[in-house]
Image (cartoon, rainbow, N blue to C red; front, side, top):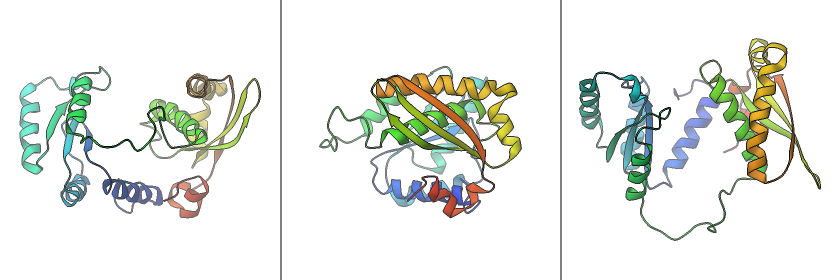
Length: 232
């Protein structure tokens, strides 16, 4: 994320910087055979961190000229001493198993930090919000990459059903219209997809209600970010 562009971008950058202090391996995912203007900043951060890095080059299925792939990999190795460079296609699942195996090989063995049956240390409300946001991002990533977020307003665990009321925050009315869709069909489909995944997560029947609201400039307002759960 470009440095100091918006409060949300700065938050993501700070989170990434903090995370680098406690990791054993970095997987740097890039789209296609192209560097971005801000990649130089990432190179500098990784050099200071002094930890092994795997470069995963996504959307490789779109590249027909294999010589371009080899040339890009050679250029990448000159820029930074990557432990491995892996061409992948998330869409077609090309080389994902290879990437997984490389990650396992490069991670050092250590004592378990959490119990074996504990999947995450984050609360269910957080995971539910992430599921909803993931469905939105997959469908609207190109249109609204960082212009929306999800807040769980109410979470009620009843004997036979868990009721969840979630707010989807956007910055403009035009974005709200996109998320709702014609006659509310898009929002309804997002809710259906999210509800199925949430039911699998918590192992219970779920009633999910989604609303879309506008909060102008939330992504560039530190207080708004904190109120929406983006805390250091």
